[in-house]
Length: 416
Image (cartoon, rainbow, N blue to C red; front, side):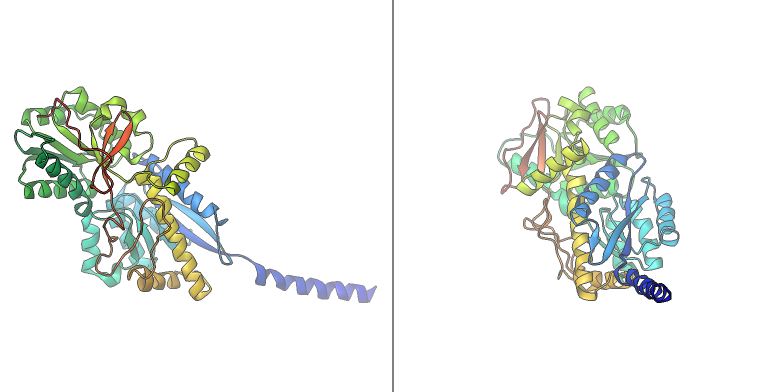
């Protein structure tokens, strides 16, 4: 009996050592997004798209379990920075991923730099982010790449489409006068100022710039002002679905006789449910579900979550989350672990330099940075590119650039 007892003791001691060898490690990822507040619909799409990417690998990379800590930005710079720091200090995140607003990126960049936490692929597009990085590359290298290039690099497509239509006689504009509007934040002003300058360069007179608060839904005073300005074109952007859909509807309700750019209307999948026929003739610039892989994703997302995703939100998030997963896999392959330090090294050595890119995405041919473009992705037909679209009858019709367009720009009868 004594021998049996001793044998059991030895066996128990041997088994006690096994879990330390087989025990799964955990990588805590702080995923930043507007999960509540005026842009919460975007946050919901983000969370669902991220889960779809990591469910496919059972939330595992090597012998690491990937655990997401959801950091709610609330679309507020100060609150997001506090929440991010809490995720570092209390929740012990080792790496960050994602984000939507430019002003949130600017505040959270400071936290990532303070704790030397690499944060990958936030969508904040503002040029202020580029300026901050370029002023101190060593400090801000931890904010690893933007998932959305500056507005200036993308918005030129609108002006090219207009000038082409005018040249071809499709738009017999009586006077090249335009007005700019936008949400009063980094993104809205970046987009509006970029579009305004590009229009001026093309010979347009920009008669006004108007900025509104995030979450605003009553635009009648602004639209009546634009009516009185007698402009041929009104262009701008918002940061949340309620605002952009309200502005779009009210331009028609007020009888605005201008061609309208409502950039970001299609950021959520139910844009037509929000605007109906009021969206007809409106211009936007967003990626489309043009590839078989993107269509499959759209269908799978809709079936799983019971609502249709937006290509600029869930679609792009799915791709950047896939890129992030590829970064994790590359780090584990090289170092055999997923430490904060090694993830930062992969970022500096492979992501920023363009050695590591994503060609397996569903929305773009390739997501790639270079030391010359960073923190922006490479923009171009074979890289990151948004087509200009015109909404008609609930459909998104590509009108620019020529190699993807399916129809010419349509000028409604009421536009001068």
